[in-house]
Image 1 (cartoon, one colour):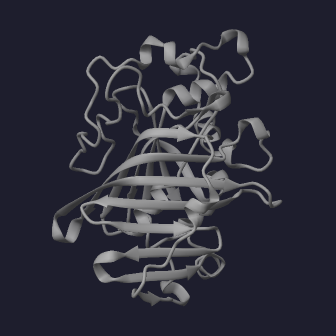
Image 2: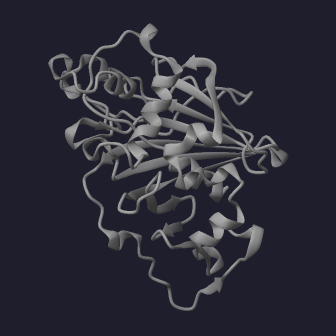
Length: 308
């Protein structure tokens, strides 16, 4: 469950100010590029996602036990573009607050999974994880700019939710024991912003757009999830006035993910939705340093069992 929530939570982003684009003008390629472009080193510096933070709501379904598990917490993610490679390095901190406290932290070199209830820290080396599982599509954690390389991406059915956001279905190009399919709901306004990038005369301040005003805002973490594992029919996030989950950073950089859902081959699923998004506001590197609690047991897994 931890591994799915982590990978889901790190799917991200799109960019630039918003302009009105008719739905018929949006292609599958437009939506895919909206997701990938902010995480490629070839992208202009002004159009990159460097960091984001958000509250999250997670719902995991364990099919064999017919049980739902819900959790809430806070996530912080930063991307390092200093190395010359296709995609940036990733640092992150997932802080689970309910129903139990947990921490998943990486400084880009080491990964700590802290389980206070077990008085245990699982410590792994990121490079060794990547080598041990280099053929597993779950490693898209460190390659968000290469989603179309690692996954076959198509429209989901239906291809939009009730609010007009775009819904994609991703299936790994290599067989995986962890992922059967991944569903990503992409913010329609982020796609519009990507399509109209550079057209300053057409853009408007998104916070003044009446389409983004919530007359009856849904409660965060409340949605209608179809029993067959399809696309949710409504999404939480807004509380009052302008949606607080807009995720628009300085320069009009958009965070496009409304929600993600990972389904494994056994029918288990983990869904995450975000709220109170903050993009490119700067996150201290100290936030990704894990301070080892006194007296905990440290476990160092090796080989194929390494990971999240």
